[in-house]
Length: 111
Figure 1 (cartoon, rainbow, N blue to C red):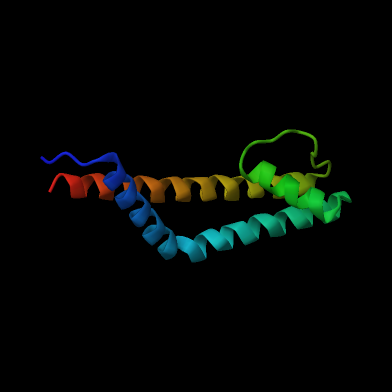
Figure 2: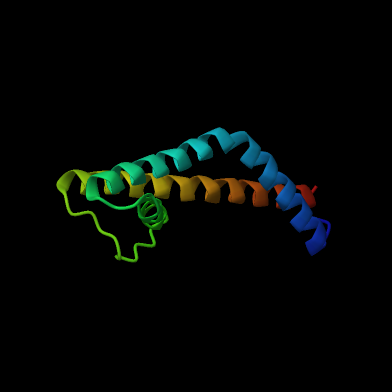
């Protein structure tokens, strides 16, 4: 087993990460577009501005949830749940890609 420097490991990780992100980019961008679209629909139904709707979409999708904007109608609450699920999916996909890239970078060091 050879010892790899942190700079080499970082370089291999970033190369693997960008390569994997290139592969899943259509899925990632589709999820981001879906989050924005759901946020805009919720904002339209709730009477929020476009900026407020997009802000709500990403705060909800990234599971931050400050609570300064909250849907009041049943339909918009259901859409907010779908928006949250899309955010969890987005986060999980990015985390999986990063773990795969790290595993690939460390596997190369053991050969």
